[in-house]
Image (cartoon, rainbow, N blue to C red; front, side, top):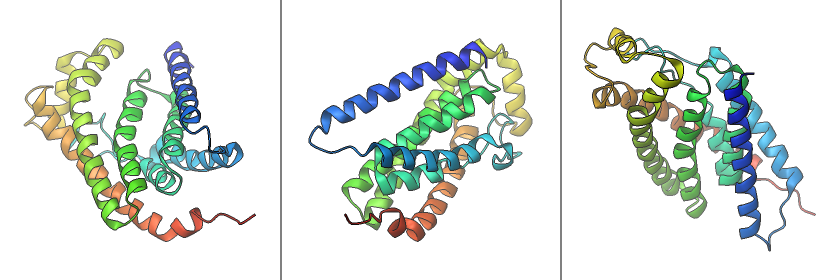
Length: 231
């Protein structure tokens, strides 16, 4: 494990601890069931990590640059969030990122970006569903979350992710542009043409698949997941 991974792990763990402290402060009158929380996070983190870490479950499409791939680890995170709330869902996002960091091939740039993108996608939808637990709430949540996630992905790719790749990984702008144009010659630069012709369609395809599969899985399992044994 390199020093980038170590620093990233420390920062993510520190952020998760601060989030939990804030949550506990805001819910002092609520009994927080740590064993149940840990068990839920562990189960869904294991599933998400398998979908995230194992290359078999990542799909590269020839119409997109080779460094952009479809991965579906957000499906179990959505199911967890819809069943148990935004805090367990965010904890799963953090844990699956921590599991992936030792295997990073991007000096943690890709993993930390995925953490941000998953948070922007999952948490708004889960929060909305918590307020409106019906099909309308699901539709509104997914719609708003998709818009937020796509905007975040496009802005972050143009203004942060690609510049950081070039700074940290040592890629030249010409090299990255050549990789993009090999997939889509219409991408004329790494600014908004790249965002609209690569980042936008890739995320819309991925989000659509995640939404459909999540809906099917959660509709099939929601009664089982939300069952609690009476004392």
